Length: 332
Image 1 (cartoon, one colour):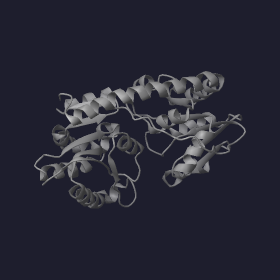
Image 2 (cartoon, helix red, strand yellow):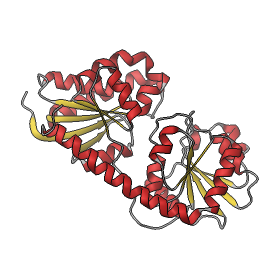
Image 3 (cartoon, one colour):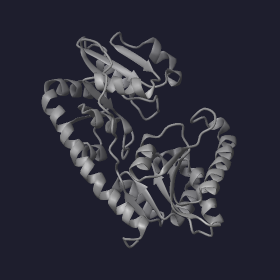
Image 4 (cartoon, helix red, strand yellow):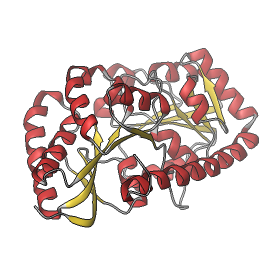
């Protein structure tokens, strides 16, 4: 099969992926978000994955790209791309964008053998941090750390919020998000109003019924309204129980220049080294962190802009390494 030497595509099995979209834009690739039915519903995942595999192969056989980037998880997306590579007699290469959950979440542990098989045959596996890159290398695969690209949120209208100190908790109702601790931390703070993002259909009903008066669950927001919310808030909370997670919410906070309250974890301390208060995922820890942001707001606001500049320069350096790898200017 003849492939097109100038064609690069990015495949992600998701209804939305900011990292995939940003990578595709920065590296001049066509992005294909392939998704059927509701997102993250294990019950009918096998049937959904079959449809998405067929869709993926149809796109690749039509476009015939020479380089395919593919997001993992799920690993079955990479399997579909590998099959395309085989059909081209391995002339087409693939690069796996391995998210932290692909290697750390217990859901994917039973498929480690498949990851190992596909990672070893990939042109390279990109990760968001060195710790995950070392895990990839332990499977016998090549790996490159690529944290960025920085998210760009254009200037625009801000959403009118309360007359208090406004906080946005970027939240998806995932099990690794200590939402209850955040709600407990703010419930007695009369000078604080907290906005919690995320589809409330995924929220435990008791949390919605018992929420403090100074908390608003926004529900799912359009991208336009979501950006308005981020522009309008004073600071942004992004917390997780999982280390080595490059949180999209933190990147969005950097994009809008808002101070961050983040979990006190080694990777997050190194990645979010300015403009951020790192706290334990406890009500008391979060409460102290919120107070620190209020007291040092001007300094933190300046530091977050400095962090944005540093991360932009880091992205430019690392993305150049990847481009050189793809074009054969660097030795693998």
